Amino acid sequence: MLNDITLGQYFPGDSPVHRMDPRMKLILTIAYIVGVFFIGNLPGYLLALAFLYIVVRISGISFKYLLKGVRPLRFIILFTFILNLFFVQGETPLIDIGFIHITREALRNAIFFALRLIFLVMGTSVLTLTTSPMQLTDGLERLLRPLQKIHFPAHELAMMMTIALRFIPTLLEETDKIQKAQMARGADFESGNLITRAKAMIPLLVPLFVSAFRRANELAMAMEARCYRGGDHRTRLRELKYTRLDVYGALATVVYIALIVVEGRLLG
Image (cartoon, rainbow, N blue to C red; front, side):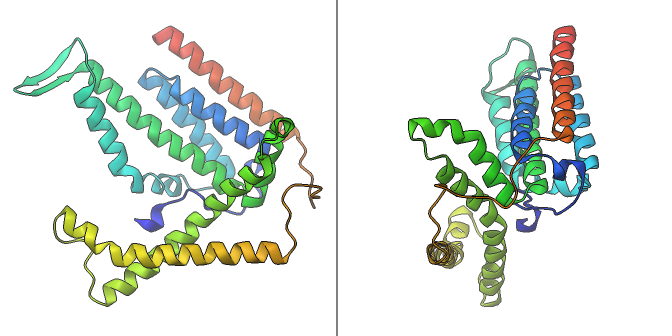
């Protein structure tokens, strides 16, 4: 399951999506997610899926690989589905047996919330898979730069978020190594009840935390040894600039949002 997590990983390539400005990709990803949360029917989600599929095909990433990133979150998605199914009130009953009360509105709400989580993960994964950590840092910092006038730490925040994303695959790889080492020593992470499994995770979590703190300390020392001083008077090898690809991407996203709004008004 650890190998299925795609968030934070970077897939090198030379596709039009890879060559887009990271600032524009951040803006368009947010626009796509906001559009998903405004969808109110199944045809709208089919439209969002079609748009995402086209972007993934253009980027050269396998759509099956993108779907792998949803697997580790299946329990959260299932929990969200069940929570909305049983606790959302409605007027049209579907099942009314004893203490089980399920309405049509609750089922509809549960399906929509589960789909929103799926599209949220997949849309964000496309951003990280097609944008290097350095590009993400530069793009996020440039977008937050106007807030520096009110002494907002734009560069520090961008750097922390990018380092966190960058270390997700590293920590997952470290977790997998520690888990295999503990299993070779006789540790059992799968059998027993919930409390037993929680106790069995201690030999896994303690070395993982020690390794994470050690890596953080090594990174801090490396940055300090290179006289890193944040964003003050920092120069860049490659300056960010918008191109025609960014204009085309923005126009495609505007068309996607417009279709969602029109479809929602016609079928809503």
